[in-house]
Image (cartoon, helix red, strand yellow):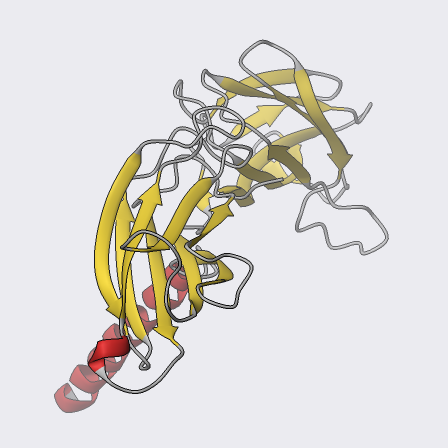
Length: 286
């Protein structure tokens, strides 16, 4: 019996570890999102000396930015035909069509074999409408003697981020409203806010069976209601009732304290908000 009990506990431990890993994996779709563009310059091409590409990335992404540049040249074999190049990574533009500060420069020799160079930068408070720039250019003056081509990929952390919610559990009597702080006083970076709450019909401390419709208003730091959604609990059993889902796209970084106003529109029944099926910000550009 002791051996059986030990085996059960060991397997239970393994199950809990796997369950924990699976739960963590559902937080985000991937460690990094990316945007990829191709480039080319040199003899016989429209761009003779260099190629510059722009990338719209949401501001404030955790972990910064990585620019992964793959390149190679055309032309005859032999080291004498290699093309010396420079690769520049620049922060987002400081204003429309005004290049941002240079973050990092790397030099390399483009050969007939594809090579990879990676440049890094902390994230920026500017983003989306003010793009990052990556420039690949001939390291000498004039036209590059042979065509250099490849791809530029900007990686950033696009995982969904859980938003802090004050008063996770609260009662809402029929016909009344409550306003809760949402997030922190720092506000939000660019991205898509998604809220899918769950609640039930409350009869004192008991759970009733009646579906209850609520209205949720998302309020920005200036006090303006920017998005409203109405519906029933996200885990309501009746498929004919619309489930509440509030989504809002932040086109720019907005500092300050956001709020949620929750209204019980049911004329007869009280509700208790018990959990959030989604309460997240996903970094993204409009």
